Image (cartoon, rainbow, N blue to C red):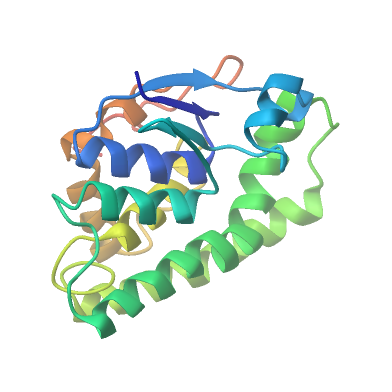
Length: 221
């Protein structure tokens, strides 16, 4: 049985989960308290991070190469376009969300409000929370600009770029940190991707001590 060691609200884990689900690859989800640095887990990934995927007799770590592996090993349905320039754009946007968006927004909101409590690292830093709440506006506006020109974030077809963005935004939406009224085009995009079968398990996530808001699993939010 394929296994994914993850934590529910990790956007990097969610990106892998979405890729697996879209490709209809069955996987057992194993919640991993990576911050405890369990010796068995550290043997799987000495970096001490999730996600870690056990598949095809291999143990894979780091979300970007995991998704690239899945694309090569399980090419249908494809989450990467065939054209080299279009593939570049997908990779650019995946990097945008996993690097810039994560640094400026996810780490300032989700990590401060949820991760610190779960891992016992103390209380949220109000300056970080304020910064994240301000920066997300810029990113939502950038997404709106992209979607004004394209059907999906990277082009005319849904791709890994959309899953990367949705992974971060869905994690933040779980704690009500996304203003969906800021852009109708971004809200429509999220409604489309949220209604895909691949999203079902993510919408069923439940984090003890952090109940999901009523709109979180609502497809008609």
